[in-house]
Image 1: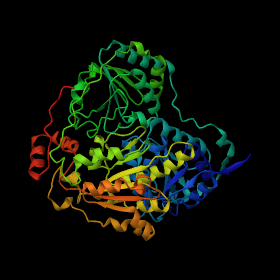
Image 2: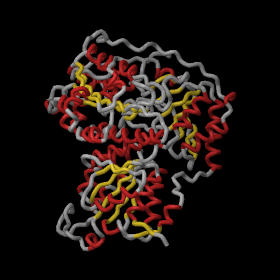
Image 3: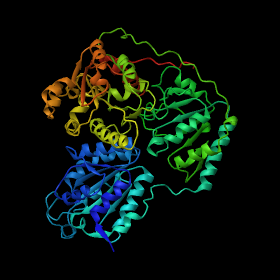
Image 4: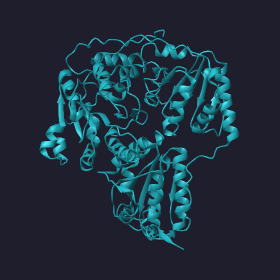
Length: 587
């Protein structure tokens, strides 16, 4: 019987999942495991500057490949360092595979005081226990017997539940041999579908839809997490009813679609959007993730008696729940059974023009101007990041061109996420291009405060020949925290960086670094930078420092904070922030 090392089996199997790049940080309990990465044709070790960044990069990679990402850490210190990034993937339902190189089984059994352990009689599994709430499955390998089946089980769970999984591999198991034949067994990553239950759920959806007079559809981010975006786009074409989306669902349906109305997020919605949405007598809500930041401080409404919800693995039709109905299978069945002539014809609402802000004629770069200007800079197939902060609330005002992917960690909201995640996206775009997909640009919009946390990963962008466009909003600190509380307090200040030195610090040659760094203090200067060929069609990392006022925030952010009540509004206004007085406008 032909055999291979267990470490080799693991990497071959992960490669079969559609993963071509491995992130992580080497450590003495994973080094021999990492050796086997180089044995797998088409699999590449990338590496990161720290484990937290590796978890973030894996998250970004997974979102852009549409599958999973993978990273490796070492026992204890490495796996704990990554935990915050894994928690974000868990919260936002992103497929992340965390491989941990553990101490040997003998060390574990004898509770040896091996470095990276805790106490005088250390439990080497204490770190494993720490991550249990942040994963949907784990392979806790202690023998080569049954190890291939356990790895396959956990990889399947990662894809079915769209959440992180862990694979713990003791160092003395890495080179134990397992049957090579196990690699020939097809890796089943699709859910078991009860066709009868899916058809029953789809039929109930269609009956409610046909009985309505003024239906609409609301598309949210879990559509993408469960690889149902293709079916979603086909369905909205066939339905031809008004389309709304959320902060996190932006970009799944092209915003130039003839039936696209806008982003509905409760109070922080554009003029007329909420009124238009609520006039529908049936809300088909697909892939909803109802967090506060994705629901306008819980002001987004969808009355139960008017709502048909297609969730990750169930359907609820006006109060009745249909279980064992995976979202992708339900959408496919709807496409199969839908009779377009039975869908009510709905006239699209006419929305008022967007409000002209009182600073529209300012020569400085303002929140009310920059996001609309960014819209004309973007190109089809771009991947756009809005870091937690003003960018996450400003870019929803940016109209995307077709086939744009939008990434923001709106629910978990860990500042610093976006820069390493953008590095992961760059690797994913390289993978996708090798498979024949169009390669867009990575457009990262981050803040000076957020960038400070994870700026090291820019070094890997330079090292790997990546070419993202990094817009750094320099507004002198944590503006998103200032608008919440403590606008003038020193805890919302940060250490100022001189961003001119960033690229040469990460070993980009001085002449290239000077050419690839840009700084704009006003609209005219930013216009000139956005017109540069090297920025529009980058061949290396581009850094654009954008100077903005500390007390200037997107209207959506101020409105979101205003949902907390009159005291929050009073504090913002006294600090000098503008708070738009929104009124419902009939669409």
